[in-house]
Each structure stands twice: as structure tokens, then as C-alpha cells.
Amino acid sequence: AQKITQTQPGMFVQEKEAVTLDCTYDTSDQSYGLFWYKQPSSGEMIFLIYQGSYDEQNATEGRYSLNFQKARKSANLVISASQLGDSAMYFCAMREGRKAAGNKLTFGGGTRVLVKP
Amino acid sequence: GAGVSQSPSNKVTEKGKDVELRCDPISGHTALYWYRQSLGQGLEFLIYFQGNSAPDKSGLPSDRFSAERTGGSVSTLTIQRTQQEDSAVYLCASSLGDRRTSPLHFGNGTRLTVT
Image (cartoon, rainbow over all chains, first blue to last red; front, side, top):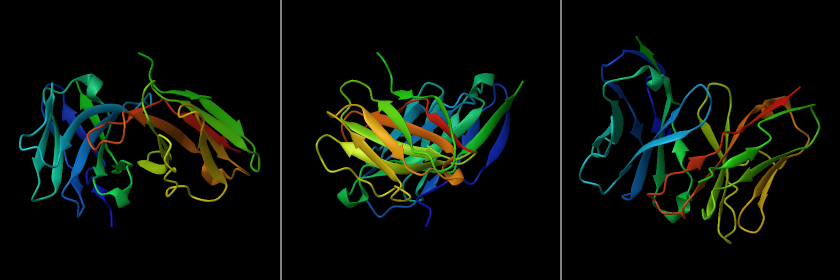
């Protein structure tokens, strides 16, 4: 079974509007971390935001916020006031807490966002 | 400070040849990871090093792939007898320890093309 599912392969968003990128995950651990990364066309992976499973408040970092719904196992990324530079591939990732899972980040398949002027 | 450095940035090799990819992590980062990204795809975990512990090799796709990390710093990923399906971008990442909260910091990758 997929650990991380991103159901939107691609989407368009109008400049200055908000966009929500969906991410659902599958784990039996109580302790885990969720991450979002941005990958522009240049290829580098840029860390955006982190949410811990025990965090009661949704994480925010500037224009990025994470809509964390633990019972539904979803961790959607919200980008407010989209800019042309937000055009990129976005990846959701999870690190599980139990030792047997190792320490790797498991990534979803990504969502490509194109911001239109 | 300096980020994760990978070399070469591009490598073209003939099928059947061996290749070595190098990663220099962020200074002070004890955890080092290798991932592979095929064109338009997500990231596939290959191997993970943490300090002096035995590496987690669970993601290596075949015994043609191996990696080592010398002195707890620089790492080399070796692919023997390369095949065309090995063509991908190989990404190295490091993190500060193995805490659940530590994000991975990635290098710019090595684009490997096997002809």
C-alpha cells in the first residue's frame, strides 16, 4: 500500500490566489513527522514545512501552512497569495517513528503546480 | 554555510561500465541519505547512514548498487555494470541527527545517463 498519496498530478492556479495541495498518508505509528518539499525546474529539493503528529496546532511558515487532520490522515499544504515563483513540483513526505521503519523519508508522487499570471 | 555538495552534476556512461557518485554532506550532519528520482517521478529511497551504525540498505535495488561513508562524512554511491534503467537523478541528503523532526537537506543531484 502507498504510504504517501498525492492525488493531484498537476494543477493550475491564478497568481495571488491560494492553492491547496492534497496529501494523505498511511501509518500505524503514533509518532511520525510530515514534511513538504518544493522542487523547481532547476531540480533542487527545498524544505518548506514540518508537522509533527503530536503537534496540536497546524504548522505555518510564511505563505505556507499545513492543514493537518490526524483522524483523516491528511496533511494538505496551503500556499496563500501564489506567486509566479511558486511554479514547481511539490512533494509530501513522512518519517515514521518506530525503529523498524528506519529513519528514511517516504515521498509521495508529487503535484506539479503552475501559477498563471 | 555550505549546503550538500554532489559531484559530478552530470554523468554519461556506457552500459556495463561502473560509476561512482560522490556526496559531501553539511558539516555536522550525522545522517546521510541517498535517493533516486526517475524522470517525472517521486523520490525512491536507496540507503541511509547514521553515525557509526550499520547503514540501512533496504532500498538498494540490486547488488550492483553499494555505498560507503568514510569518516562519518563524505559518501560514495557505486553502481557496477550500469544498465539503462539506472538512468535517473541521484540525490544525496543530510540531516542533523535522526530525530523525527529533522528535515533532510538535499544536494542538487547527479544526473546519470546510461547509453
